Image (spheres, rainbow, N blue to C red):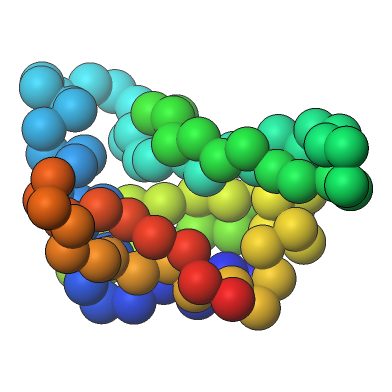
Length: 99
C-alpha cells in the first residue's frame, strides 16, 4: 500500500474542496489510477487523479473523517512501498511520489 503523508492528505482534501462544488448523493474522493505502458527500456506507469467514488476492494485513505484518496488493487500493488508527499516547486505545491 502507498503511504500518504499528512501534507499530502491536506493537499488532497483542499483539491477535493475545489473540485466538488456542491453536495451530491455520492461521496466523491480522488482515485489514484496507475496505467501501465511499455517503454523502450521497460514498463512504466502513468499516474492520474480522477474524481470517483470508493469501490469494493479499494484501499481508502482518510483524513479528518473524509475519504480523500482511493486506490484500486492494481495501482496499490504497483505503488507498494512508495510515499505520496507534497513538494514546493516554482509553480507552487505539487503532489509527488517517492520510493
